[in-house]
Amino acid sequence: MNEQLIECVPNFSEGRDLNIIKQITDEIEKVGNVKLLDVDRGADMNRTVVTFIGDKNGVAEAAFQAIKKASELIDMSKHSGTHPRMGATDVFPFIPVNGITIEECVQLSKDVAKRVGEELKIPVYLYEKSARKTDRKNLAVIRKGEYEGLSEKLKDENWRPDFGPVEFNKRSGATVIGVREFLIAYNINLNTREKLHAIDIAYELREKGRSARRPASFPYYYKSENVIKYEKDIYPCGECDFNGKTISETIKHCSEVHGYDLTELLKLNDINPDSPEGESVKKKGLFKNCKAIGWIVNEFDRSQISINLTDYNVTSMHDVLEAARKLAEERGIVVTGSEIVGLVPFNALYQSGKYYLQKQQRSTGIPVKDILNSAVQSLGLNDVNDFRISERVLGLPKNSDDALVEMTLYDFVDEVSRETPAPGGGSIAALAGALGAALSSMVSNLSSFKKASENIDELLNSTAEKSQQIKNELMKAIDEDTHAFNDFMNAKRLPNNSASEKEIRKQAMQNGLKKAVLVPHKTAELSKEVIDISLIVAKNGNPNSITDVGVGAQMAYSGVIGGIYNVLINLKEIKDVEFCNSMKDKCGNLKKDAQLALEEVLNYVESKIM
Image 1: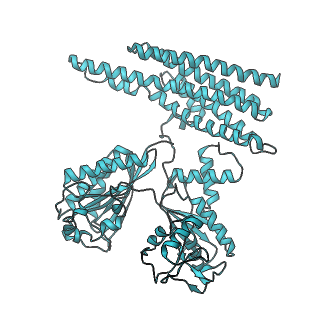
Image 2: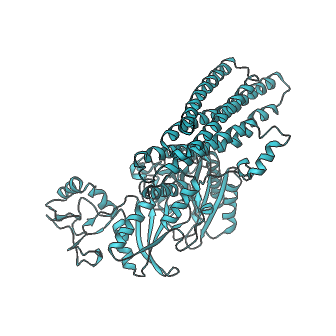
Image 3: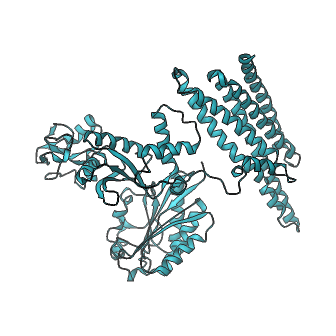
């Protein structure tokens, strides 16, 4: 679940010449660990939006090569199109999806921007989360004046590029690079064809809210008679009957009584908070980072609330959907389901699945695919189209097609039995630990959220979740153990002629061996954790399943001993005495602790069944 994944959605200022577009996307596809997902060409706009994903190093290289190729092929001095733009590569966002932080992505964006500025001589502005100046966060603000106004803009000291030359690049223009959160395009389906009903709910949900009306009509707010406006000496609150004599009074009231920043709300609605007279009073929406509108979709014969969630970590799909269900019910409308347009990050769907399981008072310590299926069913994602998790979820935990864990049980056992050194004891140790964790999770789930189980629900849900986490890590270790010696084997193939080559090869082999022993040591540590969890589950779980806990603990102990054996047998090849002594001490302590923990579990189990 921690596979590093970044999405890039660059805009290139060419939407008509298929050959140019193909040459740019070819550069992206040449880079390893990068996958091209979509090429959306717009002829009228003369713009193409490309979507690709990859790891940190892959997307950094693909980004640079794509920008370089665009600078070679697109001449902005001859460009025309309906979409705002200021450069051959107009904007290049990096979007963290999985296994990487915003901060890491920001540094990545700055590294790419610096390289583009220095090597390609293109002025680069940083935006969104990468912005060095607050007035450069908004793409529209940076783009103002577009390519045609760029020459004059660069003469203004306030618009000095973050990277690259201050001089106007006539051919390539300028490029905007930065980091933003993943945008989820999310629609909520209603059992009505009335567009105004969808709009009415959308205005309640969206961050920028709606115009306040008096008197308010319930449940359809838009049917209220009069939109109220700010007047000199009369500054009404959009939430209650308060009237400030100055806008400052009303701003203070909204902050202290209603807990929101009216200044920010007015700016969202393009109203100058210093002089709002003549503008409509605004009523706050329910959710931050939420944009919404209502429309009719003839294809589905219904209206929809069309939503953009610009930061799902702040406002989730399930939070918005549940609010929409409540607002719809008040209006006599039924939410029939919802729709995700395009792709969705794994964690966004995963958190929704956990939310609905918790709401049902069911365990969340279950397999990942079960949690995702709960999300799909609860959000109603199959309402108007089939939602295929394998195709629509970015960062979905998965294994390579030739992974050992993808084999059938029968084929895996056959593979172990063949006259090859791998998979061997290390992989089997990891499997034993994983099975032990699975049994701990099983008993936790059989025992929690049952009649009269309230006192142990939270405890056993946590043991189930932890068991699932360890199980997933040990399942990975089944294959990782087989590949643990890759670095060592690659080092053995290094040149071995001169004295310096021999020394480099020798050191690389030693480093490879050190890395190799860390894999089985991790297996042993994780398996020991399973034994500790087993004791908690044995003492608090269903007594009818106590023998399952005992079996799981013994399987986990095999994982501990198997991992330790695979560490010790390889230490004899490592020349670093300090490292070897440290690992021997760790293994000795781990074995002793595991023996004591297992003994405690088995004594407890046997006391209940004898």
